[in-house]
Image 1 (cartoon, one colour):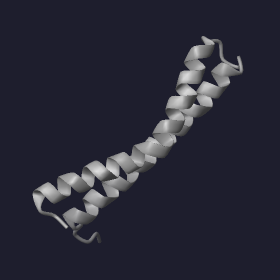
Image 2 (cartoon, rainbow, N blue to C red):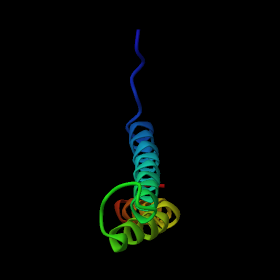
Image 3 (tube, rainbow, N blue to C red):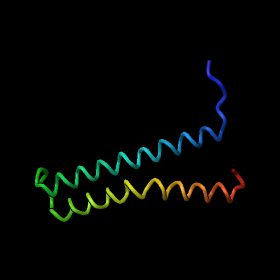
Image 4 (tube, one colour):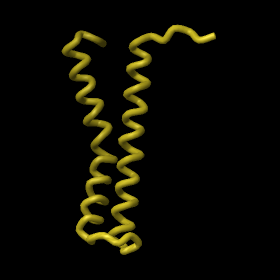
Length: 80
């Protein structure tokens, strides 16, 4: 038997999984970028560097930016 899910809990779970997906995707970009830069995968060196650096930036700054935007939207809507 399932219990009714509170909409706030459902939204929090969705946000949690979204932030996790951003981190996993960013990590995949870093690994792919390193593989390209080290010539494991045939692609331009610059593409590998851009992917690796962009992935690192997204890994560290993506989730906090998402959380900040979500908090601002919640404040506008009057949610705690």
